[in-house]
Structure formats: C-alpha cells, structure tokens
Length: 135
Image 1 (tube, helix red, strand yellow):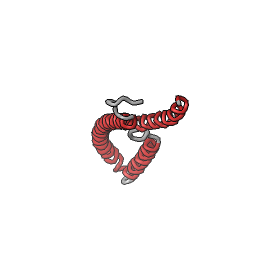
Image 2 (cartoon, one colour):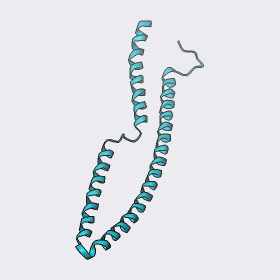
Image 3 (tube, rainbow, N blue to C red):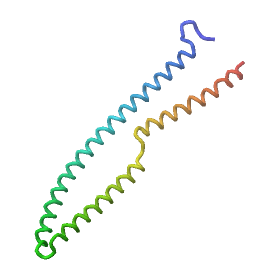
Image 4 (tube, rainbow, N blue to C red):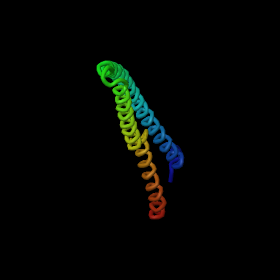
C-alpha cells in the first residue's frame, strides 16, 4: 500500500521517464555542440589548405607551361588539366566513400536511448510478474 503523502506509482514513473528524456536531450545537445565546433574547425583548416594548394598549383602550372611552351605548345597545359581532373575524381571518390562509412550524427545518444528503451521494456515485463508473485 502507498502512503498518503507519496505520489502514485504512475506519477513517479512519469517523472522518471521525463527526467531520463531530459538527460538524454542534454547529452544530445552537448554532443551536437562538440560535433559542430570540430566540424567548423576542420572546415576552416580545409578551406585554408585548399586556398594555399590552389595558389601553389597555379604557380607551378604557370612555371611548367612557360618552360615547355616553346617546345610543346599547348600540350603541357592539356596534360596538367587532365592530371588535375584525375586528382579531383580520386578525391571526390574518397570523400564519398568516407561519408558513406561515417557514423551517423548523435550515434552515442541514439545508442543510449536504445539502452534506455530496452531497460524500460525489460522492467515493464518484470513488474507484472513480480506483482502476481507477491499476491
């Protein structure tokens, strides 16, 4: 029997579920913030690297074309363009493969929610039998 001053069991269970949901929401919020900060940092570094690499490629390409123009004409320019296209295709292929194999966003939070659901389901199946055994 329940005491008169204690809340009913369904209310305590509801409060527990709400507290659990809020804890998981906070965990997801922290995880998203960390992922966003890391993603922004990586993006800025990658963009800076791309700008520097493009400047180096322009200077190198101009040097090669100027050095070989008198002997081969436009052929070195075409060869460099094909080389750059090949490198781009390889990088895009690698990027698509790595994106396909990346973990989904909030994977830790989703795993914890799945554990919580399993724990709630197992305790829900245990309680009715425990009540019958006690009766």
